[in-house]
Image (cartoon, rainbow, N blue to C red; front, side):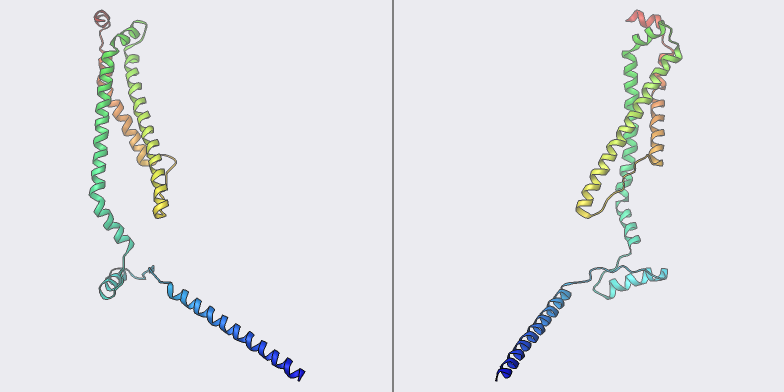
Length: 219
C-alpha cells in the first residue's frame, strides 16, 4: 500500500510537472507567435543588376501592386528641380546683397574722406606722401572687407551648427560642418577683397590729388 501511494504521488507530480511544462511551452509559443504577427516589413532596399530594371521594376511595382517604389537618385533629382528656382533666387539675392554691400562701403569711404580731409592734409604736412595717405584708405577698405567676411563665416558656422542639432533631434539627420574654408569660400574671400579695392579707388584718388593748402585754409 505504501509503495502504491508513493507511486501514485510520484505519478501525480510527474503529471502536474509535465502539464505545467506543456502549458508554459504552449503559452511561450503563442506569445512569440503574437510578437511575430505584430512585426511588419515597411521598406526594402533593392540593388538592381542592370540599368533597365531601374526604370521598369519601379514602374511595375507602382502600377501593378499596392506598394510604392522610389529610386533615390531620381527622387533627389526631382526634389532639386522643385526647389531649384528657390535656390537660384537665393543665389541672385546673395549677389545683390554683395553688390549693395560694396556700394555701401564705397559711400562710407567717400563720406569718411570728406570728414577726414583735414586729418589727411595734416598727415601730408608732417611728411606723409600722397601714396601713403592713399594707401591708408586702401588698407582701411580691405580690412573692413576681411572683418566682414570672417564675421559672416562665423555666423554661418553657428547657423549650420544650430540647424544640424535641430535636424538630428527631429529627423536623426546631421549636417557636416567644415572646419576650414572651402574652395568656394576662398573664392568669396577674394571677391570680397576685390570689392574693397574697387570701392576705395575713387576716395584714394581724391586723397592723392588733394590740395593741402586749400584744405587747411577751408578748415
